[in-house]
Image 1 (cartoon, rainbow, N blue to C red):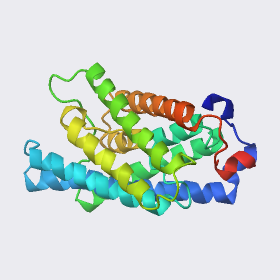
Image 2: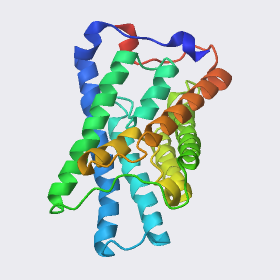
Image 3: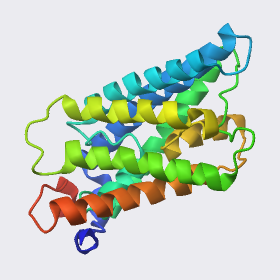
Image 4: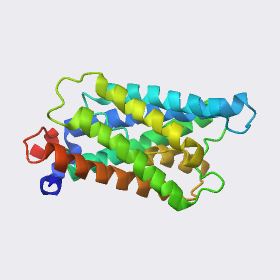
Length: 252
């Protein structure tokens, strides 16, 4: 079971140069991702004078997030692994691929990257609000929770299959493309219901800047549960007890 490989890490890990570089890479990748993804929604609102979301707007959101995540994962892959998502980091931790201390460092960097991206957007757009994630009409918190669990399961399962599995071979650019595609596809499926976050940091930045916290817990609990289930399922049934690569922090 992957639980047996969970590592806490050492006290010096948080200040190790490689860990700090990885955290910086996560910060920059998250900033790139949120700025483009959240910015596309703000641009849509400006073009439509804050009109109702249309199918074209949903497709545009899915496309912008898919492209931005492809880039964000790609530019961070060789430094931090390109998590760009606290839920992905949590899944990696459960699989023994990152230590707890390094994971916390990633979380801090990811959350800060999202907040800074939203602040930059607010400044660059002349004070336009970065809209917080919210549930659509007739969508309950439990409906949204299921959406977030299932969508994030698909995302983290894809991450494991294309980027973590030691048997993946040389997938090269395929992993970031697949990860971007599943996020774009999930936005098409769930965007009209709860915004399709799949990423606590993506929800956190707009919530902080707009100071809107309605049902915010859904966008944490759902992704973390989905990520945890995906990590345990993939690691247990498809990686098993085989020796696989772990991030250097587990060796400190």
